[in-house]
Image 1 (spheres, helix red, strand yellow):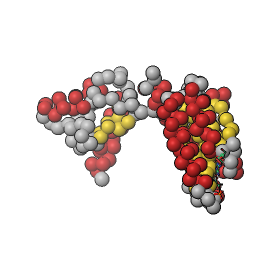
Image 2 (cartoon, rainbow, N blue to C red):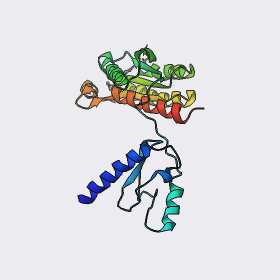
Image 3 (tube, rainbow, N blue to C red):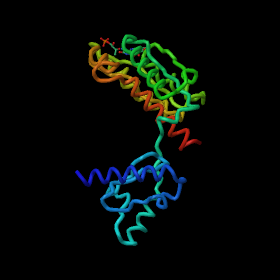
Image 4 (cartoon, rainbow, N blue to C red):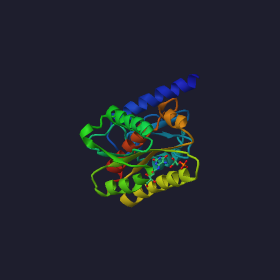
Length: 230
Ligand SMILES: Nc1c(NC[C@H](O)[C@H](O)[C@H](O)CO)[nH]c(=O)[nH]c1=O
Ligand SMILES: CC(=O)[C@@H](O)COP(=O)(O)O
């Protein structure tokens, strides 16, 4: 317990130190070098690099310092959900099962607002059903106007195998839209056995998958825009 507290305080100290210093080299910015220290934050990616994950081994010997310096040159790239300025998003939403998809859309819009995405930077595009989402997402991606596209739909099982055709086409189609357009297309399409399952995932007891999809879109937009721009 005591050592966990010490580790936590070392971690905090180190975060402060790293924030206050320039970007590289990372090794130069580390003041804490002890085997009990659980890791450090990279200010480049905001990620925790953990000792013992094959990343870093810091001991008392000079030899392990060299190994540490080598490992610390590894860059970790990750999108930030707080750097949303200038990012533009499209939401493609299916009208089929609109009682559910409107709630998913609401969750997505609330999330964009929470993460400071401006309303003017969001376009909502309505399509008849989830089957029509992929072609629309691909078209939106090709416009080169948006940094990510959120796809929202609700496929609910009926009596026949139609469900499988729509659900699978929508899923593989959204994937393909992202691959072909080069713009992240996020899958916020519910595939449920009944309406109850769907409502539970549209703001009910299992959360709101529209909100989750919007957050994923922000992270992916940021990753591509800030780290992987062509
Ligand atoms: N059954 C569901 C559909 N079906 C409609 C299709 O998506 C499509 O619009 C139609 O086949 C014309 O191409 N769509 C959903 O989004 N959810 C369903 O449960
Ligand atoms: C997923 C669907 O399209 C669904 O509404 C079809 O219902 P059914 O299989 O009863 O025709």
